[in-house]
Image (cartoon, rainbow, N blue to C red; front, top):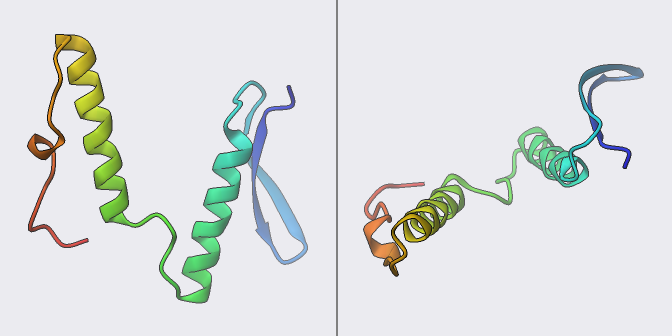
Length: 85
């Protein structure tokens, strides 16, 4: 497995800023980070918004609590309604 690397690029200069030889998700992370930086550069909205990330965290917390308690949990207890984003 090759792992991943993060480089900071400025014109024709490139500098390695992080390296992980065993991270199987590094290429996916690099892809999404590149899309995020491109959106900032282009002035567009990134694909993953704050609202999307909040929903993902709610799902993760609910899954952890369900696994810990052994009970079914409802997601509406983890949602933050009325918050912009």
